[in-house]
Image (cartoon, rainbow, N blue to C red; front, side, top):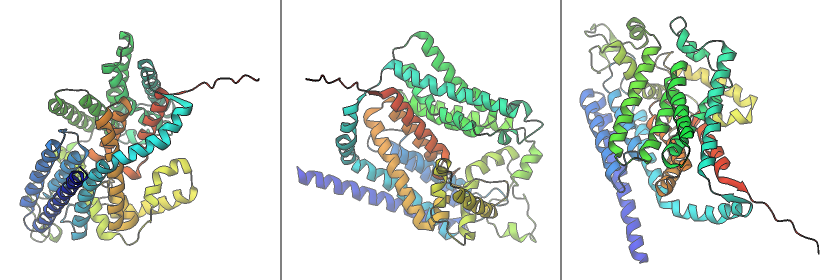
Length: 481
């Protein structure tokens, strides 16, 4: 029996090695083609993204929201379409950029696989050391009414935070965006963080709505909370990010409790994309503004224009609105390439500490971050295009070694959550898994793990779990003899 287990383990790791080799070859070919045959490179990478997404989705237990499937599809797809180089600021990436992009992909998949292998041992350890001790003092388990209560409290906190923000700022961005296109940025205040935190409650609310035995008015109330947090407030804020985060959390919850998973995912995807496009249009940018923000290449570049003729991308114009969407999907990768090419010094963990400094309140860290953020401005392809991809700050901190180390740590942690979710599918494992999907599905857009948002969402899930699942045991009074 031990031999069979060993053989199974060896076979599993052989498969991981083969998958890693295939992914590495895909990036190598992409790099070799990107300098001369950009269209072929782009199409090949996009096709590879589709193949890898469905391969991982169907391999083993079928799921269209497997983290390594989602990451492979999104990371490769956005890498691929970036090679079309429709916009004037785009240029062929350096070999170091390709190395780090491929390394991140290989490492992410390896971390997920490693966590699945080690999960049983980690679970046994935690059950023996942590859960057993907790059970001595607490009764662990939730009821339908407790779940309703924590979902309600979390949702109300988010709604009240929005109201408080309106009172502080004196306006709602939706109603002034035509006269002040920066209204949605200027609207941020300290209380806004409570609204963002409340987005984690959307998944728990949906779980209660479907699985809990509650009075009809309570279910209607939960539906209203979800509608307000997912659609109404993000619309009033004109914040696409809040809408997409809430939608991903809700999508993961709907998917977990649905039988027709593929079609549910398609429908939810359509709603997410439609909401993003609607949010973009709400910002009120004219075609002339979009053309200035996201300049395309000239349809017929002048032979004297060295910058454009040296760039082998596709030389035809796309519409301003399509440029807006295309830049959203690709500019973080282009900024990462610019960072790789221009970086002269490392920040040695500064950006990995950044999200926790919200709690630490270190003035030294704040000052150092301010200095480094000014340097980051010089690394952008255009000053107003501010986003970097998932691995950028890991590279900023420790270079290629940082990309390998932190991608492995992140994916390993995500994989543990995913394995736990697959086994139990409780309200809080679903919510925690949904939060993992945010940096995974939006890996092309932001260095999420150097951002406070995912940590805030996980913290909210943990607090909701404590509120719903732990009840302190009453210690019996001892009588004196």
